[in-house]
Picture: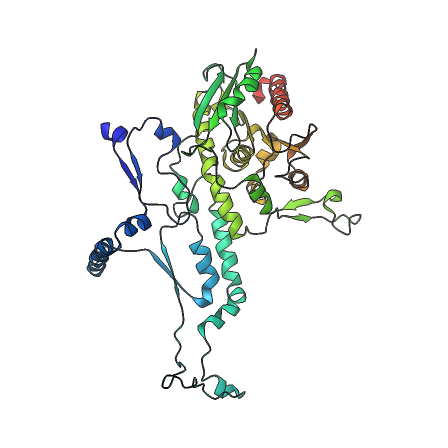
Amino acid sequence: QALAKTGGLVCFGVAGGSNQQAVTLATGKKWKGSLLQFSFDEWLNRDVATNSRILNDMLLEVTELVKQKKMQFVIKEYTTERFNMAVLNAKQIGRTHAVVLHLPRLQENPSRNAEGQALAVPETSLEKDHVSRHNRSWDLDFLQWEDTNADEEIEWRIQKEKNLFQKVPHPAGAIQKFVEAPPTAIAQELGCSAEKAEAVLFWLPGRGEIPQEHAHWLETLCVNRELRVLILEPHQLEQDLKWYDMTDNDAVQLGLRFSIVDDDLKNPCGELSRSRGVASFDIPLLPSEIDAVQQVEAAALGLKRRAQLEEERIKGASRSSTLPFFFGGFGQGGVVALYAALCLMDKPIDAVAFCHSGIPAASMLGKRLTQQVRTHTRLHAIYDKADEEVPISFPETIHQMFSLARCKVSLYWLQNGDGHEFLTEASDTVRRCAAHWLDERQKRPDFML
């Protein structure tokens, strides 16, 4: 027990581009040990001659262990004909396997004579039989890789997509590494206790924000109400607190892709604003979108874990078909709130508010929508036309997408021109949305609560 609180840790880097920290913020508050970030490059350059010999001895020892079958490596091997699959696997976040690309050997190599003489090149001919006897250079194989493996790439994307945001994770899925994700840490609690509360509001601050700075406007919601407010904070041990690596602008630049099934003859050009069809989300996510959604997934799972703990304590929550929860957040926090509410919760929550949020791969939300969420969860999108991080067209398209998906969604435009900042007008808008939610709950018949 003492070692768990004071023992030292050595971090040997990260796997496959992952950005998960060795020690989470919640653990770091209790753990008083030392953390050493080991860098192989720094170690080798301290004494190249000595450390190279040490490294050589270590590699020889590893070789013997492999020969004796006492050590194994997970290796995925590809030829240049499957180059695109090799790239996709190499870019996979959190991978623990090696990716090896085998280049084809040339059966016939041009030979050089004595130094200074010209390169001897075999005679060429346009006759088919003659050409077939001469191999081209291996790098020409790359010219065909985009077309030769398109079907396999699509299957890979579909499989990776299936593993994302599963309520019951598959053991072999990409979500597996986050199964043990702890509940999101609580920065501050407001309002009544969990045992007395009838509803809970979860607030997730934006990137770089101090969570406690939101207490002054959130506590006004608790006056004369049996409401519990939880201000949450990211797990990362960094001065610039963030839920994941992407900025809101990075997420917007990933784009937004969905299709519309529309038989309206009055809209022959397929204008989105005039469409009365139904949104369809059959297009597989791109590799860049899969990587982006995996970043959000870890944080959203933490929020789900926290909500589950609150569900166990809130009176009457276990007997209801919906949860008396309101998820809300600014920027990245709003994205995490939205993904958790629409994709992960076992029961639909009442409402979710996302403010100034650049939503990565928003079509994933449509893929995980259920009829229960469409019916019971109200979406509040809050944006500013002066926001340089999230352009006007993005929230407009998000609103149209959710409307075409038959969701209960509202879009609010802030008027003060504060840009990508969560200031008074933004907090007042969120507060009005939350107050409307609480008032609406009081008007519901008892059997609906």
